[in-house]
Every structure is written in structure tokens, then in C-alpha cells.
Length: 220
Image (cartoon, rainbow, N blue to C red):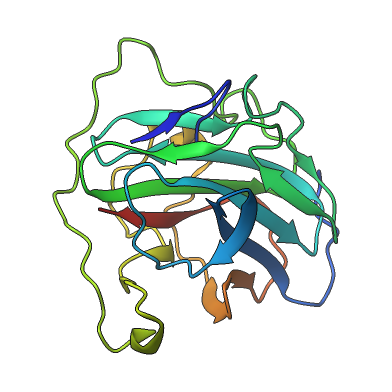
């Protein structure tokens, strides 16, 4: 579970064109007083403080949800502590959280499943995500423990797990109920690439509706 620490800590229409529509996510970790981009598959430690950078080549709206390793769902963005302005513009960089809040890794070892919902059009009331009901019971967490891939970044001594980073949501997988109205379970071609420490999600065809994918944050 990503809990908020310090003062407030915690984890448009698209312009249609013939070019692939591209989204980029960078995971950053606070090291001392400096934010540094890290491998999307890096296995983090309890207490690590993180944030995300988001960039796209089209206009839209962004929503971010999380299912922690405890099974609890939480809306990360937009919300009062992390920023309310979730309209994005092509070519601009955005920080999540958009405020001085940061996310702190906590909870049992496992994966934070961060859901990214990006829509080319303004969502209807039925589609628009909102905070989960206060009475909602946590879903059963996926009991997987991150493992180091010894073949990756071994020279630097980094522990990375190939199961972490951006992923397509499998058909039939449980997703937060408050974003299910915008999730299209039908076939959609999304390409997941790595550009150094940058995770790239690309759609060869212009998006005409919301798209949802996940970014798994591994931690000990």
C-alpha cells in the first residue's frame, strides 16, 4: 500500500492524427533531496518515496487509481491532496502527484497495481472515476513476491523484476469498480516499450475512447 507521508504524502479531446498516439511514464524515487528516474521494473524498498512523470503527444484527461499489495483500492489522482486539474495537453510534462505530496511505499511486500485511465474525450458521469465507497472491502491481494532478475542490470547491483512496469490488463481481470465504466474489455492494440528509464505505451491507431492499462510497482 502506498501511504501518504510528511505533510501530505501519498502515492480533452485527443487531437486525432495519423501518427501513433504515445504516452510516457517515468517512475522517480527521492534519493536524499534529489528526484531520480529509476527503472520501471526496479524493486523498491519499504519507505521509499516515489512519484510519476507523465507525457503524451495528444490532448486528453488523466485518472490514476491504485490497488495496493494489501488489496485496498485508492484513487491517487485527481484528488485534493494530489491535484484536481487532470486535463492534459499534447507535448507537456505532468507530475503525479501534481502537488508537493509524494507517495511512500508501505504495506506487505508485493506489487502496487497502478491503473492509468486516459481518455480522448471528456467522460460521462457514468464513466468518470470517483473515490471508492468508504465501506468497500479490499479485494484479495495477489500474493506474489517480487524476484530479482539476475540477468538485468546485474553490473549495477540493481534488483529488477520483469513482472513490474507497464502492462496490458488481462481479459477478465478484476479492476477497480469505479473505473470499470470506462474500461473497454474488447481487443485494443497497445504497444509497451522501454526507452532507458522511460516506459512507453503506444497506440498505432488514434484513440476514440478511454483506454486503461496498469503499471505494477514492485516492492519488498
